[in-house]
Figure 1: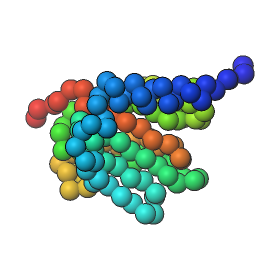
Figure 2: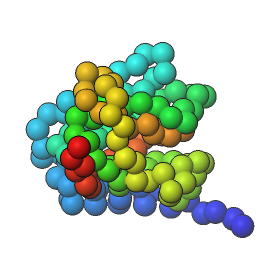
Figure 3: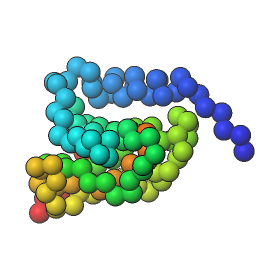
Length: 131
């Protein structure tokens, strides 16, 4: 099977994300995780959590990133998808992540996410869980 990559699709999806979520018009980003060793950066922009793995060769299967609100977070953009030219390592079964009650990055809860090398994911809180 030959996979044809539409390079304009990523741009289109990024613009649709901004149109739907108003990413650029929201307040300043709140960076809460920077790790020079793993080359991972995470920040909030409005209700969206952006996670970037800039490492050229290391992927992480269960990388912990702090979140304050306990709940379920849905991947709404994943640069590792094959349609964007990625490797497709993150299965759609991992697109919905439930928080773990573990303190990370100074926040009460965390997500353990798959981070393939040189990728980014955008998560949105879809369901708040009360304990």
